[in-house]
Length: 459
Image 1 (cartoon, rainbow, N blue to C red):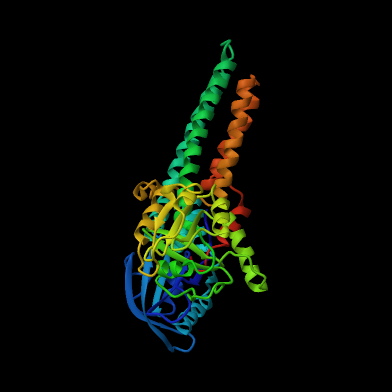
Image 2 (image 1 turned 90 degrees about the vertical axis):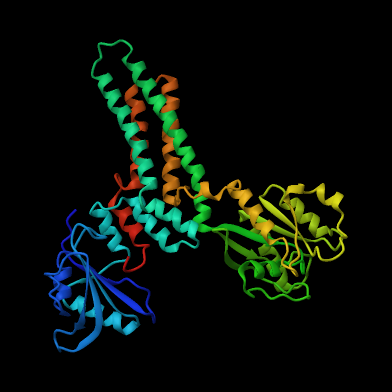
């Protein structure tokens, strides 16, 4: 797709910093930059070079900043178009003034995500790779970054393309069979081929969705809620894991009255930690609201960390929490192991599995390594290395894959009912189209505009 105009935007975060970058992309990017650059003639420098000089205002001749300008020629650039990147001193005024000069030369201010959109429209990347760009930017751990880069390099695209090719081969074979009606069993042969391929593709999609669950955890983090009665060590645990004093720790019950959220990196996996208000019966209005909020957060959690005080007997609220979380992924921390044990182990083991229990001391920061190992076992079967290959599916991808499975189920049902092959093909082709929407091979312009509008300006 040929795009005529040249766009410009600030590609670094606004604010004080060592370097700021203004990027231009389009047929006239190099010429426009050259018009406000004092140094080498940028229209004659080799591709993929960085050139020292100054940006100046052509109208007044005034020097704006000392810069280094990167020059990239089409098609070997991010957008497959001529690109310049003006590296100037960081700061709001420097980059803003250079952007204004670029617009004065005739460039248009880029829309959010327009550079990546052009990379897609010009065929350098497909739609799933374009969406992975934002995953790379938003990655919170090295493992999330690695998984995002795998998708950016075409991990998901390669798999989806292979699935579509398998379906296309079957459709071609069915068409050939239909073209030779002299064979009596042509209908049966065709439906059998569609049925066989539908089963194969459905199984492969199921495996992608299963892997994607781990990918979601890498990208979004494990939604972890810390619960327990007041003054049992929840806020202390949050502070130890984050290495900060995010939560106030006192001996007064009910200190935490609202949930506190923090991200923490546990062995390369982000945990979205929520420290909740201690759960107990209370008539204090603000604390009561916090307790109710804690109960709602529990229902949405990927992981529950339930703290008990092993230096005291089980209380009614402890038993209530043990029963309320029995069907969820949970880890039970028996805190205060530095004190004599008073908790009734027989009663506790009737409400929880021994494998869920970990002894800890927030005072001595003991048991934290055991907690991290248990999280790894619960979500990645103790093997994070294998999980690194997980697909990072977003909501759009997941929905399309699920709709494709529904269409394939229709194919299977129709073939087993003996419906005519031309009717069966309709659902088969629909599933093929749905997979194409993931990579952008069969997608509407409105959806493309919506997706790229969510990108940051300058990317």
